[in-house]
Every structure is written in C-alpha cells, then in structure tokens.
Image 1 (cartoon, rainbow, N blue to C red):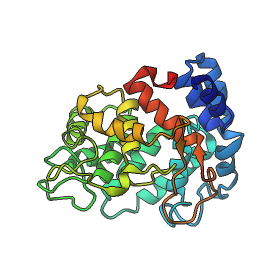
Image 2: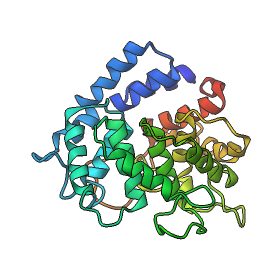
Image 3: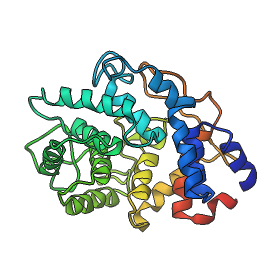
Length: 297
C-alpha cells in the first residue's frame, strides 16, 4: 500500500509533492527545493499569484471579505509552501503592514496572523518586534490567548486564538526571547489533550475533528498536531488521543477524504469530493512524526 499511496500523492499539486518528497520519502534537499519552487509557477499557488491586484493585494480588502482578502490569500500561499521572499508575497505583506499601521487597538488573532505571515514570507520591518511584544503581553494566566479580551488575564483561553499565536511565535526568528511563552502555550494545549474541555473531558469544539484544506482562523485537531510536529515539540503522551482522531479518520484505502471548506467565497475549489491528496499528505506527515512506520501499512 505504501508504494501505491506515495505514487498517488506524487501525482498531485506541487504543494503536495514537495512535502511528500521532504517528509515521507526523504528525497534529497535539492529535489525538494526544485519541487517547492514549482508552487509559484504551477497549480494552486500559481493560480493565486495570477489573481493578485496591481496594488499588491488580493480580493477587495486586506482582511475581508473572507476568504479572498490579502490576509487569507497570503495564508493560503503559506500553507501551500510558497518559498520565502517571493516578490508577490512581499508586495502583499507591504499592503498588510500599511493597513496595520491604522489599527487603533490590535486584535490578538490578527496580530498572530500578521506576525506569522511577515516572518514566513520574509518581509523585513523593524515594527515586527512591537507586534511580537504585544502578543507576549496578551498571553493569559492559563498559558493561552483569547482575542475576546486584552485586559482580563484570568479569562480562559481560546483554542482558535492560541494556535494562531503559537504558529506566529514558531515562525518568528527575531531577537525577542519567546521560549517561555511558547512553553506555556504548548502546556495549555497539552493540559487539554489538545482538543478537549478541561471541565468535561469532551471535545471542546465539535468541528475540530474535521479538517478543511485551509483552516482559516479556526483550530482543528490536524492543525494543532501539525504545529507540534513542525515546531519540533516533544511527542508528549497527552497528544495520543488527538493522534487517534487522525488515525480513525483514515479510509480503508489508506487515504483521507476531502472536507467541506468554511462558508464563504473561495478563489477556487482545491479538490473535488472524495479521497484528498492534500489531507492525506498532511495527515501522514503527522502520523509518521508520531509513529514513523505508519506509511508502511
């Protein structure tokens, strides 16, 4: 099954192929880099770059309407793996920062997105550290974050806001020491076994066991596990229940299916209903991190 599965995945978009070659087949770095470069010239990534506005943005606004705004299109390019410092992404980040300077009060979820996009795409600005400092200031007593409050440190954190904050701090490579915030943020999720209520032990967000191709601002189990994998975190036993959610979603043919995207206008449909190369590649990256022999089954 493993050979057939890898062959099927490698017939997909460049955004899938470079991750499969890097994380599931251990291809040489030059081969991975060559495949990743194709994200800008072929398939989904190229389609998004083609609809960029002359002013460097996308859609009809910087943050809205969702999901075709500049912010969410830059997130899509991030998730697809567009190489850093692509000129189109840098122009988009410039639009993002022009908009950011007009904020009255920073909103924590959006701060996290701006930090992550700026860092990932390699946009240079001295103002980034100010936003990272704000993100650290907004961390709550339980270790997470919640965009619904800026001054109530005793409020319970939001899974949605907290995953975005941690992803942002993982992408950040500046001079501010974020290690304590990252440690406490991870511990917030681990105390909840990633996705469960601390009060009842039940699933905290029912929709979190579904995995749309683009999670947007929402937390889900696959997104959470991808964070722990990609950030180099320890395989903590408290994540075992969440890993089982991914495992149980696997079809008998070894693949995972396509999930319905969040409501709202999309640039295009990523994949038709049925088995999904995109979801399958994401899930296998997580499972091979947790249990390396999983692709052999």
